Image (cartoon, rainbow, N blue to C red; front, side, top):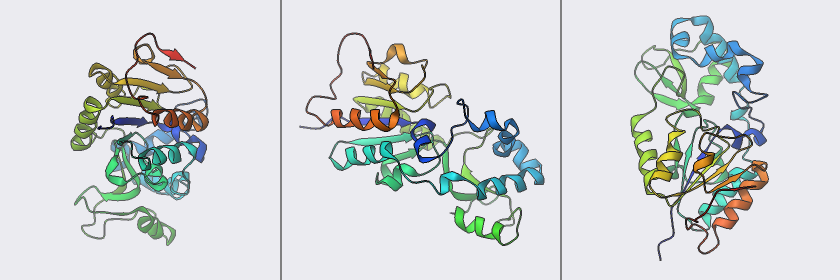
Length: 255
């Protein structure tokens, strides 16, 4: 018998236990330093060398590149190893799902990755540590070694569009899955947030794991408010049980 497909949309809340702050939460990066948003806004980045220099200094201190997977990431990898068909759609750029053991081909990074750089001119890519080594050596704004163009993190900055291929794959998975778990996401940033609605529209069981209310709570079959580090492993263990992926009837359960 074919096992149901589980799609998991992960937001910033999944990685906070790894020491990576979210952006707009109570202790989020933008609340601590509103000017920091300019460092990841494409127009400012491309037009102001000082913004780029500050951005590279920020990348040197980026906790995401030093972080380790936490219990939530490990639980997703364990679910995949147990033979449950899993696809991860992540809003995060830290690469921790892959480090936890989820095969890279099963992870869609909607907002790109902080673990690579990309040239805005010729689009060549490489490991972020190579670019950071040049910064450490004294290059405050390292240029592309291939064409001399401006380098940036291989993340989707404010003002840039998502990769249409990645977004298309995410939509296809959301339509095809039998269970859609949205975890650690406010479900307010589109188009990623809309994937929860797409999944529900196509008959998936929608489960939301998040500390704060989301716009999709009323459409969910289950809403869990417990801390992600304990709630997600417990939920995914439950999904491994026979019949657990079937869509239940009745009103949403809030834990």
